[in-house]
Amino acid sequence: MISDLGAKAPKYQRIADELRREIKDGIYRPGERLPAEAALLERFRLVFPGLSLQTLRNAIGVLRGEGLVEARHGVGTFVAQSRRLQRRSRFRYGRARNDHQLLTTHLRHEITEVGRVSPPERIVLLAALEPGTEMLVRRRTLFDRETGKPQELGASYLPLSFAEGSLLEAPEVVPKALFLCVEDLSGKRYAHARDHWQWRMPSTAEAEALQISPSRGVLHLVHVARAADHTLLEVSESVWPADCIEIIDEYELPEGPEDLRGLSDV
Picture 1 (cartoon, rainbow, N blue to C red):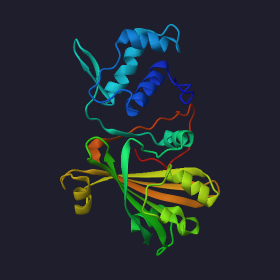
Picture 2 (picture 1 turned 135 degrees about the vertical axis):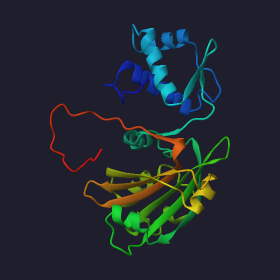
Picture 3 (picture 1 turned 60 degrees about the vertical axis):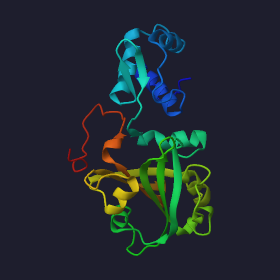
Picture 4 (picture 1 turned 90 degrees about the horizontal axis):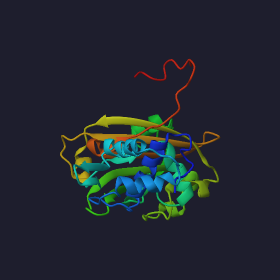
């Protein structure tokens, strides 16, 4: 029931993780009531003997804070009708390796363009590419399956050394996570990733594609992925309406001092 992925995490966090997964998998759908506290307590005591009601409530509180559920006084706790998309970068690859599915199976993928291009300047700079380098681009729009509303604009830039003449040149959704296809074709494994985040105003084309006002900000991510030998495997970018996504980063804090001057301004 509860995976070992977060085995070191507190009990309330692991319970929240399990309920979050079930909500995203559609076991509990928007507007649906979660089981009563007594039922949840009985269920999770099978994993955590002696689990207290307060610990369970702390787990539910995490989901409320994320906007996934909402409490209705005297009635119960319900899955929110609308919620922010969540990106937990550190866990995306491991999950996809386990289920061999797309990284965002809960959204409908539509490939809007496949072709050879010289990437834009921001991509060239962040990926340390030679100016004029030609790559294969796969552009996509991701839609909410229930409402049909666009949720994300994305693009992946892939080296021609392995993408040329492959299934990646077909304007179709790949059968599993794109990075798994890249690993099969390149013979290399994703080992290092660097994310660059930027808040900005949308371009006219982005506002139209996302069906948002031009005055509504967006979050723009450039994700650079390399193999252990530093070979570039993929540069992907994603654009979301800024108020529709939540970035969650979990990590261990160092116990002692570290000399990392110049690596963080805030």
